[in-house]
Structure formats: structure tokens, C-alpha cells
Image 1 (cartoon, rainbow, N blue to C red):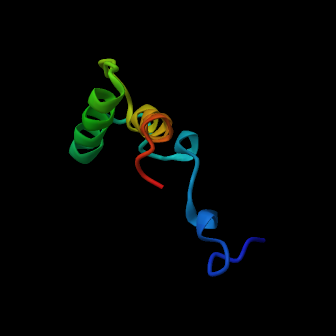
Image 2: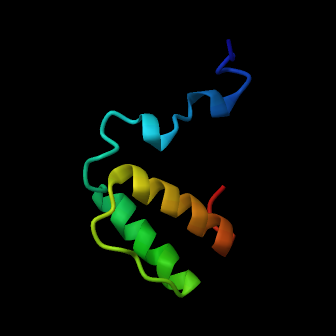
Length: 68
């Protein structure tokens, strides 16, 4: 079993496992997603779920060098 004090990623849950993952994205997710997409020169698809938005944010952060 992972010790969360020694492994900060242990508390990170896969978006597919989120209870609320199929709900619409939060306002903060929407805003950040649009900012990242604009920087990457991409469009944000309509109708994303909270989990899909999270995954797309991760992808765009890697692409733009933002975040982590």
C-alpha cells in the first residue's frame, strides 16, 4: 500500500474512477481548458465531461509546457 506522505501522486485518482466524472466540467476547468487550447492553437470540443476535460487539460499542459 502506498504511503501518501511519501508519494504525493498516491492521492491522484484516475478521472475514469471519479464518481462525478460524467458530469459537466467545472467553471474552473472550462476556463483553464480554453486558455490552454488557445495557447496551443486548438479548439475545445463541446459536450466534454468533467473527466474528459481533466484528461484534455493534462494533454494540453504537456503540449504547452504549462502546469506540473
